[in-house]
Structure formats: structure tokens, C-alpha cells
Amino acid sequence: MNVVSGAARDGCLHFGAGRLPLRNGALGAGEAMFRPEDLRLAEAPEGADFSGRVLVCLFQGDHTRLEIDVGAARSVVARIDQRHSFAPGTALAFALNTPALFTAHHLAQELDPHVAGPDHRLAHQT
Image (cartoon, rainbow, N blue to C red):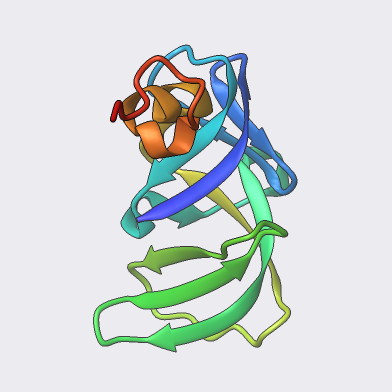
């Protein structure tokens, strides 16, 4: 599962390498989550959701696995159905086939008291 942090607005999560369409009309800071097989290579830059540079390209029989540097804390993994051979450093553009799931940072704090700290209403009581 890919996880990208950014700011949600206008139906997308915006981050340094571009934007990701979201399943809901979320707002604020949070994370978008999507599967590697939900990505495809964009045919033209204007049709892309984000771009990045190839870190690793592996042909795995029926698909190609790409690890992409998007300038974030974590790289993004793409599973492309066609056979490709991209050298490390190659710039590529991607589009998301299915809108990503969004988790707001404030929601994560409400669900996990350890994230929220001692002042939060759901923090562990002793």
C-alpha cells in the first residue's frame, strides 16, 4: 500500500510531486492511500496526477514493478501490466485509476490515543 502525506482540498490530496484524486471531499492535512496496481503511466504530462523519478525497475513476469521517488519521506510503488525497462533517474508521469482513500491527521489522533498525547480526550486514563 502506498501512503502519501499532503493537504486535501478540491477533491485531491496535494503534495510536492502533484496531486491524487480522493474518494471523498476531505479537507486538511492527512494521508492518501492507494495500491500499486491502481497506478498507470500517463500518456501525456497534462493527463498526469503526479510525477517522479525511477529508483528501481523490475520486470516480474506479467508486470513491471517500479519504485518511484516523489520527493516525499516514502517512495511510491507502481505495478504496471506491460513490460518496461526504465533506468534509475528516468522521469515518469503517473495517473491514478481509482481515487485514493484519505485519512485526516486529526482523525488518526482521535482513533489512536498515543498519537494525540496526554491532553487529548481519548488519551489513556490511569
